[in-house]
Length: 401
Image 1: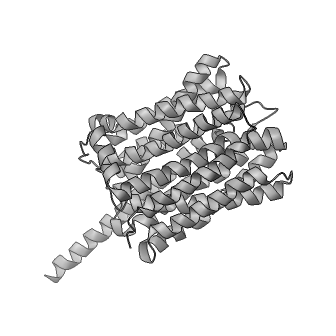
Image 2: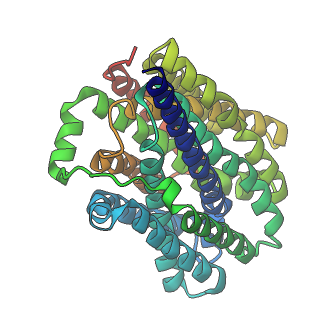
Image 3: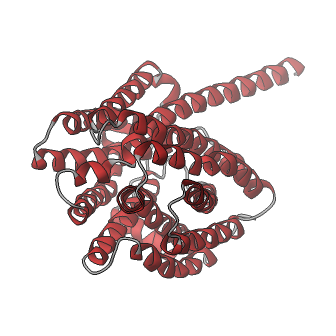
């Protein structure tokens, strides 16, 4: 009897160790995927603007996010048919090909197609990684595990602006896309060599798009999480599309200075998300922390509008403060959502991620319209007012504590 108990404990210990190893591999992949996605992120708008103007650059993002939104709605069908492992490999190859075209081509039509494919495939890859990590996660440790997962990705985002700034020579961006392609290729090979460790066969749900939308709409917590995520991505749209243009073209910062500022501003994602996830798991509910995050974001958006300083220290402080709010919202969104769903709920996971593309889509569309009548900084003031409505959606979320 005692031997059986010992063997059982040893088996549990091995299973825990195997799960931990699998998660670490996924974390490493997420770091390199984030690098690949983030290195071009802050220069995409300036790169496109070389071939057109700021208003038309906005339409590139409108098209890309429309395509991403539609793709995410139907991506669960792809995953059910060919599984999560095969779909992530295909998306990585699409992403790689798109980055190579962006690196080499000067044809505006080819650039447009490649940009849309790059944008869509990179977002779908993160959906695949979501499913991988969730398959090795317990509900009791969801907040911590999701926070660690996002912290690895955020390390990639912290490093990337410095890398991108070093790669840009006289507003020449080809090296940026070459290095991004190298990192997605590296991620692809890590998956190939570790597929048995990271892929756990799963019977995915077969929930229709209509049923998924209905479930989100009628479940107050899911609805609140979705629209809180939508507002967060409205902010991210300005952060990666219009703030770089504003600081580079209007305020006058060069890319070396911007690279340092953008790297420093992302530090809160590494410092805050894991402690916030642990606090949410053990002590507080998610709503209170998320509300603080939105207060910080609204204040930050107002500062983006009112601050006229040309000091990198002033703008660095404003950017850093804004990411404190974003980090709190992001970690609480992940912690609460993945306490409700599991890896098999692929339809729900993918639908939540449509809030990313929807936020970028609405943000780009609104900004394009505003740019027809106002200077770019007025988009920040408009968003600050719009964000007041976010508190309604935070309030309808049911705390896990």
